[in-house]
Length: 83
Ligand SMILES: [Zn+2]
Image 1: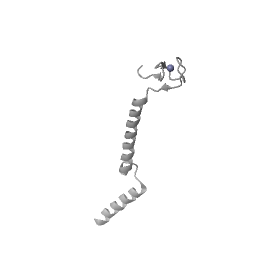
Image 2: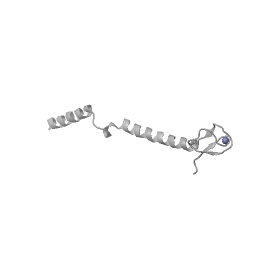
Image 3: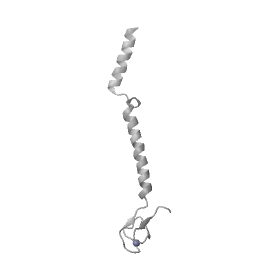
Image 4: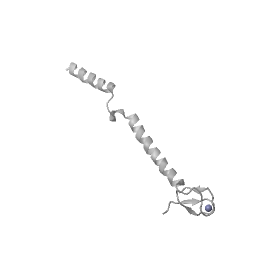
């Protein structure tokens, strides 16, 4: 297992459920998710931001709003009247 909690003092492998090092009793447990966890969270945040941005800037992809329906009705009515 590559990702393991380790004691910051003696580098002893500590199980994720342990709150203190069984070797030296230190409470400083290093998380295995330091750098990679940050990368993954950053990627997820960017992906979510892009998705939200797409939804926000392209409302026609969402369910039509009452105003949009009214505009469509008016436009079809105008085109019918012009003929
Ligand atoms: Zn230790």
